Image (cartoon, rainbow, N blue to C red; front, side, top):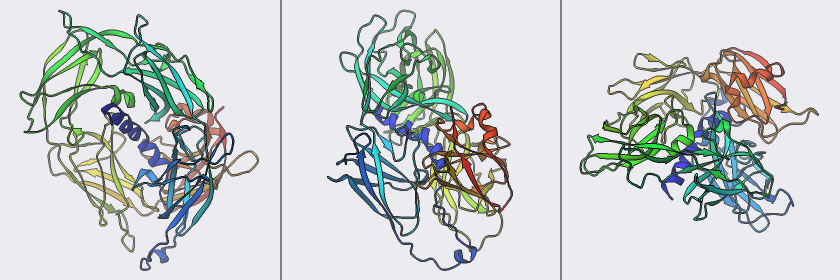
Length: 555
């Protein structure tokens, strides 16, 4: 796998992790009485899922389709299967829980089960202990393709340009673009981005290999900007490309924007023997595309020097990256690049400290729960990172996050235990609020997560205008306070039902929206036109409420 394809995969995982964590709430809708929880544990019966994969257009069964079943919040190891001659598949020995089912085939779109838009959203499959969920019909859309050509400012074809078909998501209330399919141009500048679902896309081209020549006397050289079809440096100026199911949309020709660039030089201090480092320049607020297109250079092991070529004007964060551990080896250094070369930079390698922590109960709960299912994840406020710190808690709630780079973070617990909510998170004398926590400085501060076993719970169903259940839509739980930490989302399951089991007491708005972009409910301006159509609900500790929502059309 090339470095670029690896970065693309990592970036896709990172951009969706928070969305998946909110959209899939872990355990299925199985009520457990307090007196039952106190009984000795009995080995849970395993569940299974089986069904048939068919062509969405013809209904013909499809063989050799690769299927992957992932657990809630992308936790745990996925299960895999391949469809047989009759299109049938079976996945057994499953724990009770909520799952996402994905399918891939060379001649069909990459899809999530129940999705109306390829990989973006779909139907949550909820299974109980011992349940045999049968007759799943997975309808795969025939392969859609976007094709075209990438040329330079003189109309000459450009080889080895990475072209991405993009969909919009919202990250902390800000819209950004993420790649859902990629291709590389050939010697004629041609590309074909395949395995797409029907729909509308933006298309962007990135010249990954730049700066091979000698700069001019003033230290400048030429560079290419990430360019959106047909010829815009920003997504806001791009034209959408529509593609139908099983069709090819050609003529998506992109003229890369050429601009003045300079070189960034410096030294990395504090390298250890045998350490393999690169330095990377991450564009400020660059999102997923910024992670992929970040300019980089290898660090010479002999003297620690580096030279990054073809850096265009902008605001960046410079980091040394440890290739062996695939993580940051230095804190981020803000850097402004203008029209002159940047020289004499010093980057200090800093051994990021491990952070010890513990999940604690804020209140009585008997018997004391096991925290083995909880994963602790640090969400960076400084932008997306290639490998965010995360770990699993031990049964007693203790955990250790390895090599945490210094920065500001939100601390997440995935999944939150049913019936509990996060009442407080502290790191030393800091208490986490909307500004996050400063973590990663040297010291002995302990990260403490307090869970209060008095959460409110909401469950219900989504219906269409005819009163029929609607599977595979997002239900958003939006706090009146607009506190980012309290937002939640859940996908309706195969029966059109949803549940929130770990809700902090607050006033909320419940919305079931058809056709919104992932995470769009975090944006107050996006939500405003639909507020009157949602369901307002006040939740106190230990509340149990049910609600039936009408599906709201975005259009």
